[in-house]
Image (cartoon, rainbow, N blue to C red; front, side, top):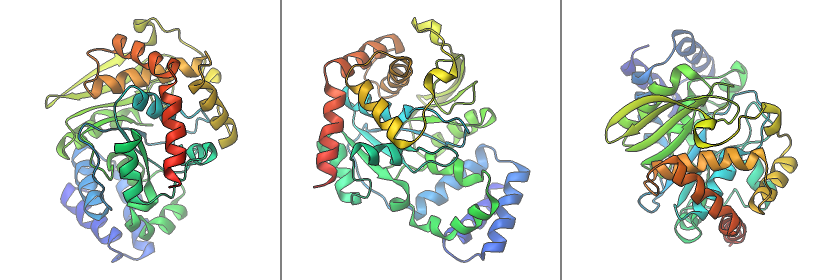
Length: 321
């Protein structure tokens, strides 16, 4: 399906003009034919046309993944968001409940005491006043209700799993995006570029993770100054040890929330190291540091000074205001 046809199909779906059986048929067709940069670019544009927008400070970042990895891991992007905010970069964290795992960002934050149902106005204010706000996807993408039953019927990944993370309601221009699919790393970076993002990394851990991993290499497409470059990140390059995937195993929201709280309280663990690495990359994207090595130091400082934990405490309080 070419970009124009896909744009027309998605527009019909999200405006409620397409019946559920036809939505199923179209989504299955799109999946069978595969998507590339052109389709993702058109799809993100349609998502943004139908989303509820908020305004946040310039330079705010998002750290988000597609999910759908099937790996039951600790909450890496969520923890990274607090550490990035603790380092002084505002975060507009877009997220949802778990898809293929029991625990998504929304589940972990809710368990930590954050009111994930805060109004868009309150969430945007949190980015400015606290340094981090949470944008709960269903609140900002109400048109997705039209495709919910069809997606549930299909039961497997559809194009919307890729489009959601690329469609931040605050239209942030700086992003760290994790992809569960290696072949979409560059196309997703192309789609971000075409939709106004100026500085980003799209990453895929070669262990299947939609984060920068510390179990081995990570494939990266880096958007900077209008150019996309591709390379690999290996933890040893930055003095970090590779760990087995089991060292990062998570589970229910209670477990992931407890681990995140322990991390912010200074616990030394493989979890801390993977969060430091993802934080360092995000700080580089934001222009806060010049390289990952400097970012790793700043990440440690954000945790060890208590700044990151303060962001959590303030977000919990602010979200209930």
